[in-house]
Image 1 (spheres, helix red, strand yellow):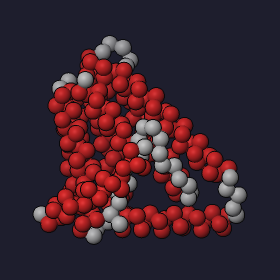
Image 2: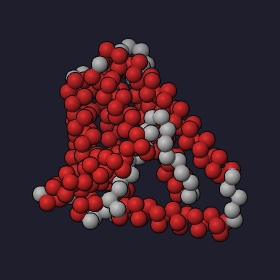
Image 3: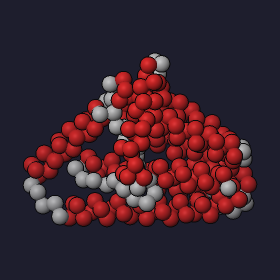
Length: 225
């Protein structure tokens, strides 16, 4: 939801910062790696029970996640390889963060609530897969109530006010499931109304790949999700 409404505005605002980082000799891939390292640090802090520190590190994790595309655009190094690395890094970051939350709950709760962040992570992976598969077939699966940006924000809220962390996780899970259903229905409707021939479908797939290449060449890395 936020990605669709604010992505271009945010990218324009980050362009000057991306140029500054590029002049300092920092590559987009290096920025992405920093994001993974910050996510690992946040995961360790959360797993150890220091949720306020985890909140701070989570916020810092979002900075390189937002900046890598701006650096790529400023350096003229946007590519499908960079977009692939960025998408893989997003999945690693998600796994680290929710893994840290699960570890924390496993050590502080005697029930099975530690499976809650695991369920959220699995749903998030499914949501990301829906978009990737739909775009490979020439369909649009963007949107939904709980995309990656919203997950970051809601998780940060739960870490900051850790007394309500478990209810916040339940809300995140429910909204993530709603998002998965929204994307499925969206693509299902597109596919149901698409009665083109196999040759036309192949042309659509080629067009989709061409569109992604043009988007990456403009410095926009997918946020995923």
